[in-house]
Image 1: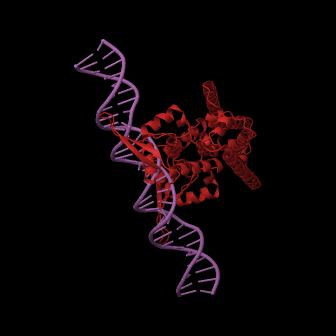
Image 2: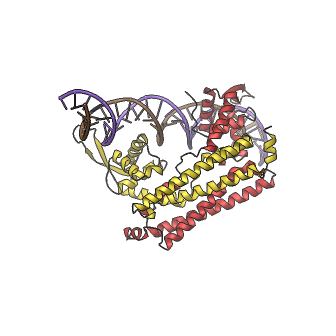
Image 3: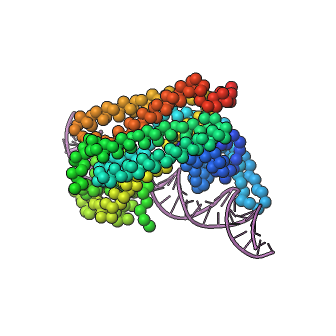
Length: 195
Length: 195
DNA sequence: GACCCTATACTCGGCACCGGATATACGGGA
DNA sequence: TCCCGTATATCCGGTGCCGAGTATAGGGTC
């Protein structure tokens, strides 16, 4: 069976190992240091599962089993040729082909008619504020990273995220106004259902 | 143990049952008809798992077991008081609190430096085109829905998605230009690494 | 040197999820 | 009336994911 590109954590593993061999725990540390876990969900259980899967498909090899003192054994892995090919091809796919994802907010807003308009308005305002805070936090982080001398390419994904968040905030602002003023299509019916 | 709000399919089930009692297969049909599966991932295996879980937590009850002819038994479910409360509260949470999600594209673009700039440029162009097609498809769908007399509130989530997709397209366009012209921060280094 | 907190490194059981398999009924054509 | 494709309705086995658990080492404090 061919390798399944489900968990992006496997992508992170391949990327890290293409720098130098590491053992799983070190991968986790490195991801943390580089703020990579902001972008790719990391948890230890999945990490070891994913590493084992990559190993089984011969995309990485167990290059050494170290044992310092009486600590648990550390298996150090290295990427194979097939692993590098997989990394690059997966990357191409991720960038070129939009994946069908299911953002939770779309699910929520699609059913907003079930709540009274006044409640909906308040909730949307709450989200708008929260998104605003995320944006300022991101701006601070970018400032810090740029101050450390990191080039834009090193945090390009944060740049993208900011653009998307700004669009979301703008949409929320529009929807809040349209709800308050009752100009959203179907408003009268909506209000009637909640008397 | 309290009910875990993981799979949004459970939300859809609660919403459907708050209209009228149904059996699982009918829920699936209804979701299809209403284009709800665009927004909430539906598959039969998960549907039955989710319904059973809701039942176990007494958010829905098995109101009747019909048997028409010699067909398989159909268990018809209805929502309970606790179920309605759960539905509303979950909805509030989904709308008001941005969830931490991990879009695949962010993972991909964060590692774009591993690919040669020329390749990256081409891939980004491909995505831009794909996003453009999604936008026109959405516009056509909206036209159709509005033509059927459905109010804006009935497809508000598509409105939101269009806003986000437009922002993504704009960002892709910017990034493509910055890559082509070499003005993205760290470009020289990027090119050097791929000679 | 006894204590405890944190860091290191991995393991494991449970469970949600998925996709394909199963089984029957119905309707229409030859 | 026989056949077969489609619709109805659910089930089930495998797998990947998760978070809590385990165990040792190192370092600081009194």
